[in-house]
Image 1: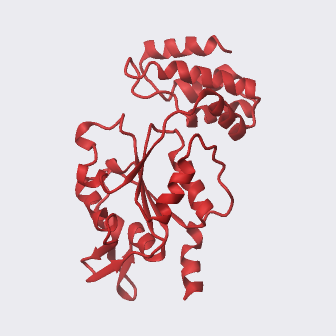
Image 2: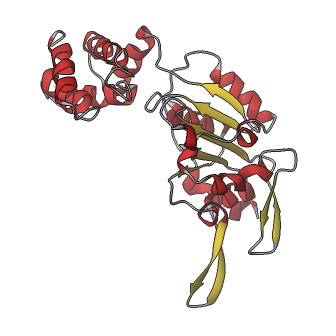
Length: 271
């Protein structure tokens, strides 16, 4: 039986350590939450390291990780499962949430507020002391594996009010706040992820910090750590820093000509 379970979860196990640079006590807090089987909500801007953190923790805890990229077309059946027709007839196919609950994986719902609210309600029975998942179409009441944990993420600053999580959902989770790392830490991250010289990484971080000050003043979002890694990766491939910054930092973040000119000017002060 254990061999069968191992075979099923093997594709979801992380073989090598995803590098993650802690910025506070988030690792210890997540480990304590997992030990207590507390659902966890990660809150922070896009590209600040939430997904990498979950991957690192799944590796650190030795648990399979089932990731779901939520979207507005996702239904409860997409999460829970459905009956399918094949050559042998009708068979039940577990959805990712059911699979994780059945086999003791960490289930990570990325950008959960993008899903419809009637879909997110499906997670409620798994996020309180019951830890159950009613599979009504199948007539099964699934009791979650002892190792199962639910993790969700979202960007509270970006979501419109109509897309925010209900309080009945929020209060089922412990929450960890993520934001942009401190200057020195972000330089370390960019240099490590791309292999570029720390002095170059420091210039990229300085550009991002200037752009983040424009959030709400022409920009919906600031330049993310992920975008800095993209720029650093281009530079590592021999692309000129100015061209790399325009491609990876400026052009993706805005289509406004005046804002592009302002960001291009900021880039040229460093390169």
